[in-house]
Length: 236
Length: 145
Image (cartoon, rainbow over all chains, first blue to last red; front, side, top):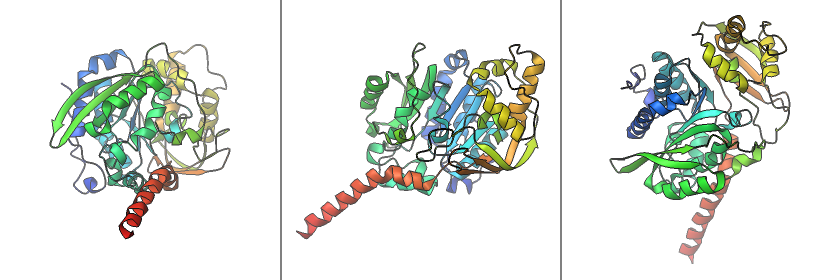
């Protein structure tokens, strides 16, 4: 049993600007915990969380793997979330390395076929189409949940980069809800990028049907390296 | 905390800046040195992910000259301890990282590099904003007629 990270240093005022861990966070922790043996065997050296928010998930991953066994990189578009993530890491003695950035923007150039574990609990809530990107540009708490059309507008910008980022044998964990059209997403990731996937956990929480999907890159495959910023705009 | 291990993975991603955009150059830095746990196995496993010449030049920008131009063939404990110190224990708390190609400035504040741009995000969202605007206009036009 891996203890849930200590978040007692975060106050109500922090949660006005940073997403407070909720059911979608906890299902992700549970999925990681149930995979903990596999994850340890992988001997991951580089872990990347997109949108780390409070820092709860990467801290938990650090407790599974050991604080000095891997580099824990996190990005968040929200600067307050970056500070909270660092603080949560410190509180639990897991050093988290934060970059205030959108998705993996500043890392794409260097981290080709290099990341052993990627984690993304995206803004998955379906909203009116333009809300997702204005929320991202606001760099506040709305960016943690507003997902635009099908709740997929932000996720769809990141998915094309997953295969290139992952090291051979690496895993990508994604939180999703039914409205995100999970089966179609899995099919696209297989057809276009050759990533196999599996729903590793499903749970109903209030009105949401939550899933954690694990995408895996086979050991033999290296994805062709791309070096173009324009591909940031690719949408599946 | 911007440590050299993280800095070695960051490149400029300004629009159109796709060559000579790494490593970012440090300027006006404030440095704090903090001890951290030494893990030789981790270092051996991580070395293939490091761009060595960039690490050497960046560490020298921060005033540390302990790394040699070439990665040594023998990864003995003395070398790994030096490498550990350079990668993990030098923290850049304040300063700027500058792209060698387009001179874009990425500020570091309280140990966190700011590499996000609201403008980029809005541009990325433009297709969605445009389509939702068109839908609104269409709905309006239909109402009027």
